[in-house]
Length: 62
Image (spheres, rainbow, N blue to C red):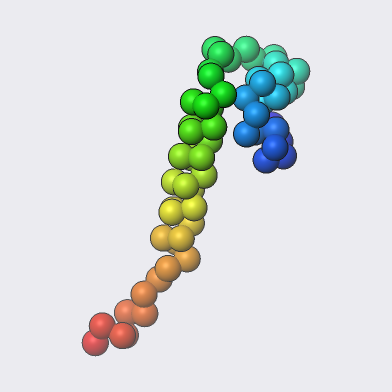
């Protein structure tokens, strides 16, 4: 399921899209908790991506 960022950040919209497209009903999550979870996932993914992008030059250590 593909969503735009604004639809992911709003749990009510995400919940409705999941029901429509996946025929899945998730337990209700308070909006503040949902926002925290999404932001934590974004930060974790950004850190992993940064780690992949940062490849120190092995010859610089020699």
